[in-house]
Figure 1 (cartoon, rainbow, N blue to C red):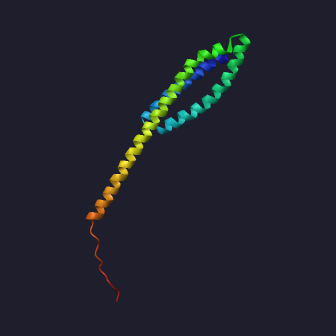
Figure 2: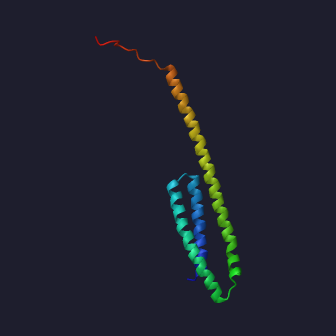
Figure 3: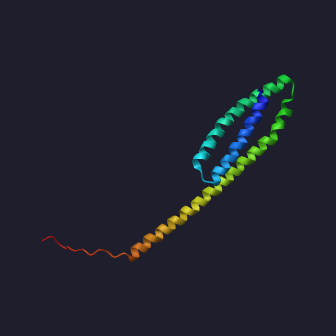
Length: 130
């Protein structure tokens, strides 16, 4: 298999992982999200290696390096868009969770105040030991 083809497949895998990442965020599946992000991190290193190999390959076969690189530009822009979408989705999910936490904190404070207001202090049965 040539580097050009492997690079295209690596970008397809990135797209698949980005879509899975989006689903994980929407379903609050944080372990899946972490797995996707770890896989993407490894894949990015692999893509860097493949990109260099592909550039060398393009030079050897006489293909213009810039012409071949432009073929991947649309794919790269799409992947950047998917990552931005996931980032925005994750931020919205985080903000929603923060708002829910603040509401729960307020409810907890209200319950504690109500409890103090309506609870009766136990009377002391012993005032001295002698």
